[in-house]
Length: 617
Image (cartoon, rainbow, N blue to C red; front, side):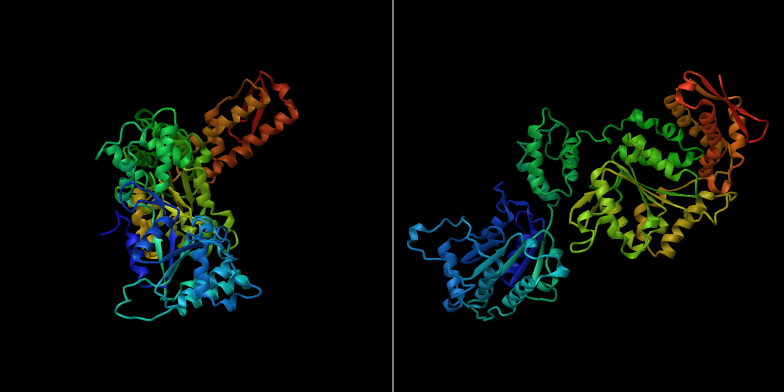
């Protein structure tokens, strides 16, 4: 039976009777309630209680700032003098603690005793070699600061490593029926991540083992919420077994017990009670309301019309996007993987020829959802086509160049948690990158090189690809089916990664139509006239910008577009045949913005050619 759902404590107690060194890493800065009576304590304090109960005579804590704590000066001097013969303490580098005149003058155990790392480890090594019945447990707290970069250790750090290695290797191994169940002298490292410690401490060393201190599971989060029920000011109230309570528990996935305590404080400090979901959003991201909460039925009903204003000729793709948004709005997204709903709000895979609106639809979706096109975080996957490119996404590990900078993807999502994440031309990424996508799509989170976990639960993931664009012909009877088959073949037969296709979901593969019809290109060209008209009104103070025959002019310009480039060729044609001649007209004829104040710029087409003249009315 575990301690109130804290299973790692049971393993800790078991390993104390077996090993000579333990490394506790992960969520070691959290709070713990061993007795289940809302008596919260830090993990180092809880470990001391467990070690005392296990039979250790003394538990000595040390970190490189505070020195020795947990025992008073007399006890530490006693441990030191027993561990190291007096002759070794004479002269330079000795261990003289000074004269302690009177036991009544002993400092309180909570007062720290300054001891440098090498002197402390010398005492540890000596104590572990002894067969004294009074066993001592040594806790090295904040051990991530004990050593520097793993690949460039100093001579002093190598000496300390040797001392630790010898302490465990040469530890007393005497066994008897009377002592086999008794504690052994033990050294414990507490650190945030095991990768921060030199591997020579624990790799292929049966005397050491590591224990991960995880973030609280669902049961522990539920117990924590119950213990803080009277402090959590939310509406509606979190009644037992209510849907609000269950959703709140799920929304706290990835947060620590300390986070939940902080959230209770936050709920009491804000002026008026908010929903539990809004409280999580406020705590996680510093924003009072979530854009997803503001997505109401009326706004969502207009999504197809809204997206269709910018993306032309892709009604089927827009309809599929609408389905994904409705799924997210109703809270049913991600349930195929887990009930926790902490996966991204939606996953979309846009496939089709170049220039048909795949990237434009992603940007339009970001603007619709979050009111800002910059909320579309675009990553060109052709830049991530080498083996170690994943480090650019999540950051280099400790000790490597770029560690302090973090990852491009994780940094971007931390800054904009509400976003559409666009992975452009996914087929060009190195296969190793795909492992990161698996984690995002299944768990809704990613841990960067610094060990910080970033949540993707408020995002929509969009992949774009040109897979099959060179083979699928526009005149095929089932273009959509042909594209889906090409994507399936790519992931299953070429990459040998069918699991990624399973996470994306074949139903979320959205083929885009070819731009074979000029009317769609004309629609695209017409949308580009709006920003031109606005710029002329704002900068040149014109009253309006008109054509003698706009439809004819746009049709003539579109006729010059290379259809193989899709809609991407339309802006280039507009620049060549309309924007550049207009710029020369303004420069040579109008000369300054005041020269066109309140007048209309009229575009006159010369016959059926692509030559345009301009005049002011």
